[in-house]
Amino acid sequence: MSAGQPRAILVGAPGAGKTSTGEALAAKLGVSFRDTDADIEATAGKPIPEIFLDEGEQHFRALERAAVAAAVRDFDGVLALGGGAILAEENRAALAGHQVVHLVVSLGEAVKRVGLSAGRPLLEINPRATLRYLLDQRLPLYEAAATITVETDGRTPDEVAEEIAALLKP
Ligand SMILES: Nc1ncnc2c1ncn2[C@@H]1O[C@H](COP(=O)(O)OP(=O)(O)O)[C@@H](O)[C@H]1O
Ligand SMILES: O=C(O)C1=C[C@@H](OP(=O)(O)O)[C@@H](O)[C@H](O)C1
Ligand SMILES: [Mg+2]
Image (tube, rainbow, N blue to C red):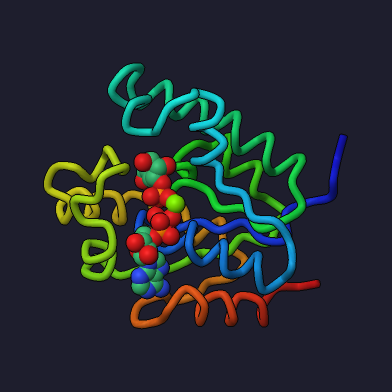
């Protein structure tokens, strides 16, 4: 069954604001919001840090590939992905042909927003160095997947959502 396609798919580093800006954008457009991280937690029946602890990152990534495939196929609102979803070739292929928004965040701002935050198992130790590594590894992948690129530093999720809404094709 196909319900159309997502109005927008948000990608970017942890702390870029995919979840919060995605919610603001969905409200602005009057459509639903979905986050693959929430889908994964619902499937696993536990929070992401527990999945990492109990089954490990590889298992989380397998759940994530299934969540991305299902959401891109079935969902017609605003979709936020987890920051690491871009690493899987299968997920990058699923994004092709969609309106993909890269939320850009600087290292310093990302550290301020999510440094040592509970709920992001990859960032629990040395968040600045880890985020620097993640950004180096992933930035080219976010850039290649994106059809729209928006800066988020110094702007609220609502302001970022406003810019995206103006740039999206109907
Ligand atoms: N544009 C922004 N300006 C300031 N803080 C933000 C902005 N976007 C998100 N945040 C804050 O940063 C944290 C991470 O945001 P979140 O939406 O979960 O990012 P992501 O889903 O990309 O990891 C939250 O505390 C959120 O309130
Ligand atoms: O960067 C990553 O690999 C991850 C980012 C998280 O999502 P956000 O980017 O929404 O924080 C979440 O999917 C998980 O903790 C792994
Ligand atoms: Mg998120």
